[in-house]
Image (cartoon, rainbow over all chains, first blue to last red):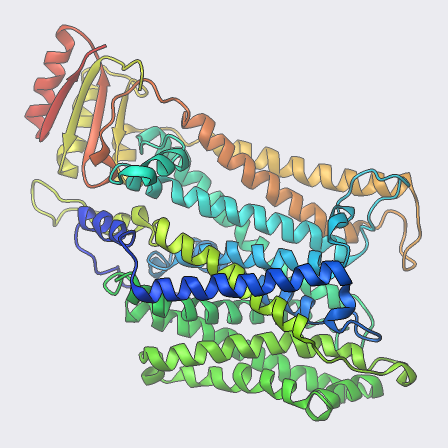
Length: 450
Length: 172
């Protein structure tokens, strides 16, 4: 891995400067930050109003109707779960690979994971229509002594998503503890009080570190297969049914690659402005973006292959229904959605072969926006497979309404509000791990460290 | 920190000086656990100098992970037999279908119990005892040795000889 991804230590100076610089991100925010925060709150309000109307009048507002009963809400669900995956990849899988470049960026991507999964978790609940009885999904002894159907991928999903949310939140807070303790020892006022609680009495003693480091390794080792399993389970929500366009064995790896691709896209969208507004240019450098781009290029190419393979198998299978579905994807009434998925995901990602593109942050920011849009449409297009199944008499379509868009906008507001609050109030760069990369000063010269 | 443990708290700027001091403290007969070394990040040199055995967290992680596997499969098997409904032509107890919840519960219990184990073994709630200084989470290395009376003076001298930049005696 390190042969492709460049392994350079972070170019920071001394331990005291790391603490100072990360503490500096808590200073009074820039105008840009306030503008983003106001926009996020406004979007959140749009979502709240839309949801209130849906709860009052029902899901019909959202354009639900035969044959498409999974629509924009499930698109949003898969989109947001996918976003989360890049964070766990960077924080857990690259930790196991000992890739030191993850150090400067993993805290922000891990936070992104937690907030993205929090956003995703809203959608099955919004989607079920009677939100107040969502707990029927859980295996508890109900009034009719019925249990959930353990043979259904939808029940697997309840386990997968709730575990993923719990474990990634635990991983985030666990990694934060020593850093929050460092902030506690420097901060003043209300922040000191909050950090004191959140540091859970951390002192950084030899006894604490010895347990801490081991458990961090185990958490990373547990998160690595977890992240692969979660999007596989999400893909089986589709693949375990018989709908043409869904019923494919390629779905699990295809969804996992797509999830990481969209997640790295979101990391770029968030980090490019974040490092400017929090003045982290010397910690999050060009080579971090270069490595993120290579991850993006790799997963984008896997997606390209998966798209091509889906079409090949549809043709090669000789199955009319399968062929029809894939014909409709690019030439049917929703052809624009099909191309909005294929062009950014399969073709635009190939631009990242060029170093000039990888080092141009403006170009990267634009590409990352297209990746987000493209990956949203991928899920939208996949769900549109419901329009053309085995009974042509029952074929139909759906048109998203303003309520669908209201909830989508609201989800960005909900995610953005959490992320911006976190970025401004918590150490957004992992202090202790950056310090680990910087050798401590020595009395007898600095040449002899190992 | 209501009841401070009496002792000597030394602060170091240089890692090699701190390592020397740890060896000297051990040579003076202080046992592992009766002194604490504070540092802002995990440091292998300090680990090696203190000489801790492998953390017992791994046993907790393994045990609770297996507990998760067993309890998830037991739950799914029992619930399916409690109200047997044939779904999709699959057997009532369809083990392959139970693998996913089984895996998820394994990860869930292993992860949560690892963190709980760190909090317990690392005595995170123990706010009494060994003295601490805010600069240890920044760029200093701290060593605290529990001692009282005449011993405090000898440890203070030991730390100064090894290159401590500050030494403080902590009264009871």
